[in-house]
Image 1 (tube, rainbow, N blue to C red):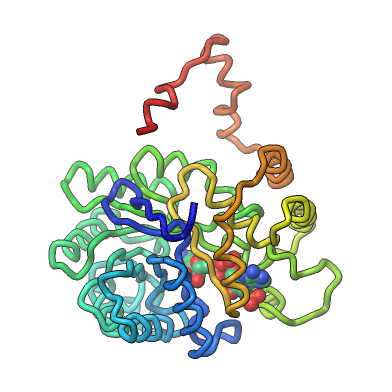
Image 2 (cartoon, rainbow, N blue to C red):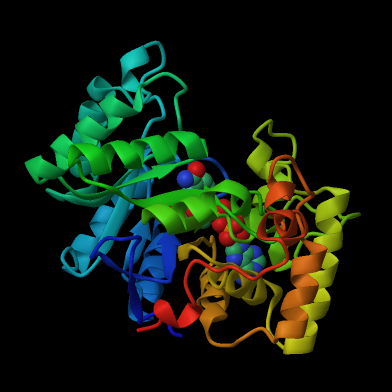
Length: 357
Ligand SMILES: NC(=O)c1ccc[n+]([C@@H]2O[C@H](COP(=O)([O-])OP(=O)(O)OC[C@H]3O[C@@H](n4cnc5c(N)ncnc54)[C@H](OP(=O)(O)O)[C@@H]3O)[C@@H](O)[C@H]2O)c1
């Protein structure tokens, strides 16, 4: 598999690369991003390698990410060649409750801002960034459908919502003839496998391709951090006092996973980052993995993640080391408990060949 082989996202007809380029590091407003010139190099290297899928959000680097992305796309006249995903939800104007969240007023405001910064008249994939706990799924789906019908948006997605909310939204779309959800954007890596419980079966069953964020757990799985290091280099070191749980990756459990990954990577002869991304790409339900970088050398490393296979014995070792703990009610669905339902017979809904065309 190479980056210039394209796959359809979820149940849509949108063709995307298995590796998307994350642009959360385009601009250095937050202190852990890349300069404008480095961001341009990252963009060009990804495009030259054959990638077509670019992920941003309205408030990444306070809007700079969208602005730079739009500029680089225009510089190479690539608008119809690339697939641009962007997002709304986070508040753009402190004190104004309708400048954030997933209500119609904010979505309509946010889409105009994104179109302007990106310098385009359409967004390929418009994604709700995070659940706001309040707006009914009916309102979100009707608004997103309106945007598709208006021509401002081609496809839609959800990020960081509960599984029940995504399932309800997709079912509403099916029953009311709205544009269906093509993508679920979620955190997934060797140290964060919780989406396997609900979201992977949800995406497979209801036709939503998972776009993975933080496949390297913000850089932890590159192996550059050590348990006893006092270095302040890299996002996780810089953000170690942050209250954002996405940056709290240096735990005893995770160090054990990193140690196993290091050994496996050595045995295969690839970098830890490549092995970590490769593992993520090949899990069930994964449509595309969003890779991020602050340096060209990092991106060049990560772009080679599709070029090898992890032997099954080493794959099993990674799987065992990173196994999430058993939780209710999911242990009811494990083969042991299911044996009490099947009476010891083997039941599959379809043989594997049924899906291979
Ligand atoms: N929907 C959401 O809620 C959400 C949330 C987060 C991200 N995202 C999307 O997902 C994209 C990727 O997320 P992420 O940046 O967290 O991904 P990640 O792959 O987990 O982390 C990327 C960071 O790790 C370090 N790194 C990457 N490759 C490396 C290598 N080969 N060797 C050493 N260090 C390396 C770099 O940071 P340093 O140089 O600072 O170490 C880089 O910025 C984002 O750009 C964004 O588009 C979405």
